Length: 220
Image 1 (tube, rainbow, N blue to C red):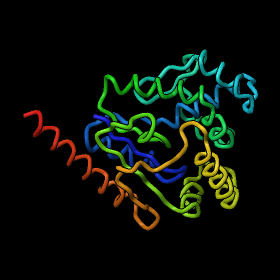
Image 2 (image 1 turned 90 degrees about the vertical axis):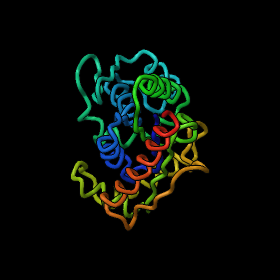
Image 3 (image 1 turned 135 degrees about the vertical axis):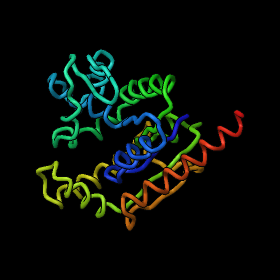
């Protein structure tokens, strides 16, 4: 079973996906962290992050391993470093490269072949898993998303800088030639701007449980 969650940066996809996966007994998979791992690895390797061919060539050969939610580069767990300001500032551009997206998509499909998953990203429901049993699109205003990211305390940027960065990422994500952010016609839409994280999670979990029950009835 694949549950796919789409939506713009900072909307809470990771938090909702994690909780929904735990509640439904599914494996949580963060697609964005694959792009972040490519960005981190390429930056540390001295690759020009504006050079599409160089970044794509690095991605094809990068020493990446994925193990139970952990991202390892050269055998070292670098998961906690994937949300640094360095990565935040370049991941939107890196993830716009077609070769990088193809590389990440192959990883996601490989993992889903052996696991029932809740996976989140920005083209998951339209490109990577268009036949997912459940598609969810989470949304919120840029201002709300910036406040949430600011209060996480993981960035040294000001609230205004975070908001400007989010708007820039939105423009990039919606204008990508490959894998651009777009809401699937059959996605369950939730504007989370005025909802608590608990309310959002409850709504998504109920949808997952409905699908699980329907699958069980079909198989019995």
